[in-house]
Image (cartoon, rainbow, N blue to C red; front, side, top):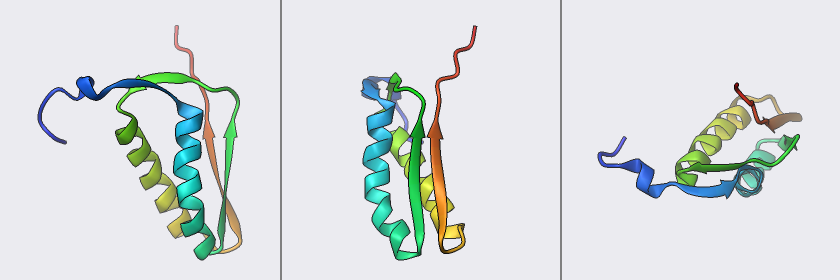
Length: 85
């Protein structure tokens, strides 16, 4: 991880839209290996984080899932808000 204050790169963004952006990009790669991707969201959540870092993590997870999934399968990406009290 780079040095410095990463919080200065934080911004508010829609997690659902961010996932859609990543998955749209990843669908071409997944289709090339015979895997489909589906996104499931119960609700949209606005988060305050480093958007590019969050998208990179999602991209790595989806890439691993599609690379190791058998052909003719579906990778399901689900996001949910976990309210902790």
